[in-house]
Amino acid sequence: VGMTKASYFEMCEALGSTPIESEVPIEFDDLFIQVQHALLVYNTLRDDWDHINGTYLGKQLVGIWDIFTIHEIPANEQKDLLNIINLLDKARIKLANNKPANK
Image (cartoon, rainbow, N blue to C red; front, top):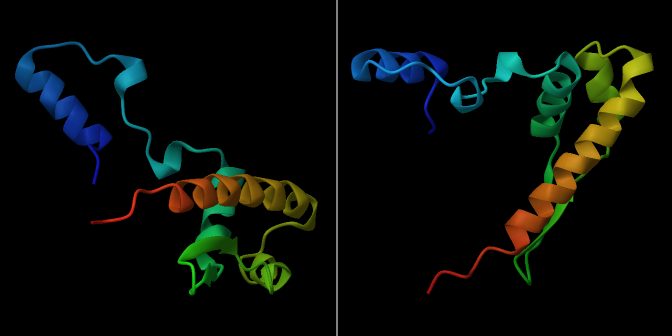
């Protein structure tokens, strides 16, 4: 769990320092609405694993259009959200599969 904006500002006040904008933690509400929607949908999708090799394969996109509908994502945003979701998934696949094995 990282530092929140509130705790960052409290820390600056306690230390008598001026907050530095580039160091203020980003919170969910700070993200563009499309990114918020993409994360909401992404977190709803099911993970796909190769259980034999322990490899993360990414999110299963089966039913994504239904999820868009349930969350009332406008049709004109869905293609962009799918692109954001694919970018998130590529990054997560890379991170998940490059972690060193626990010894």
